[in-house]
Image (cartoon, rainbow, N blue to C red):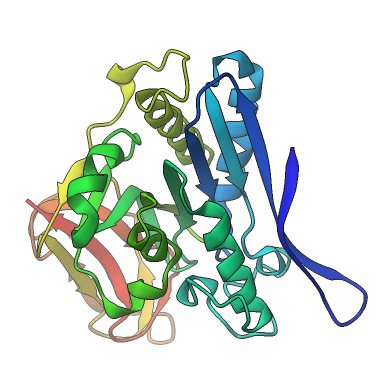
Length: 308
């Protein structure tokens, strides 16, 4: 059943609406929600929502509870491939928990929180932006790690990043939901404006594995093929930033162990035909982020490495 959780009129006869697909079967009372499309330039979640529903509907009798899929919290952003909400110049993931009597964007955020609250689990799916390529990972605040890491280990990702709670994160969907007792995991994978089919299928398997562990999905999931993730805490992540501006040229791929001193690429000058800087790994570790967009400025993030 398709339900509208928020709708309002736009100036020229159109509407802004946020919808969800509710799939219910069996006698189970648990409610599992999958959310995506908060940023309009992050499209991996669109494919994951599609694949997940395909798998569930093929064997609907194995569902014992409710699955709710919210593919587009920012539908106008997806329509225009715009990260924020068009015309409002807002990042939707910086206005939660919203305000039911505020602007359209704040009203929409408040409606989303109201609709998701009290779910047994929420998976908030994000891609990276267009600049960075990320391995499938779960990001968890230190404040919620004890509760959420056991769930995150079942999601078939390669990496779990338990990070400090920055002030800006307090206005995100995940923080707002976790603060009111609705367990929410943030998943990040791929690169902006693209869909990685391998990552999408891997994520769907992980979601179904988590649903099975919560007794919402009664189908068999081969747990031996579920990834055992690296868990990064504290100051274990090393950031590699560009020492100069130019074009970042690399043949390095993430999702692998690199050694201290290994080449990550070069910053080159197309004008002078020269190498400006060789980019060398400052540590041994797991490379989980690599720059996908070649143009960089001094200080631009080039890579993130979990130090081993």
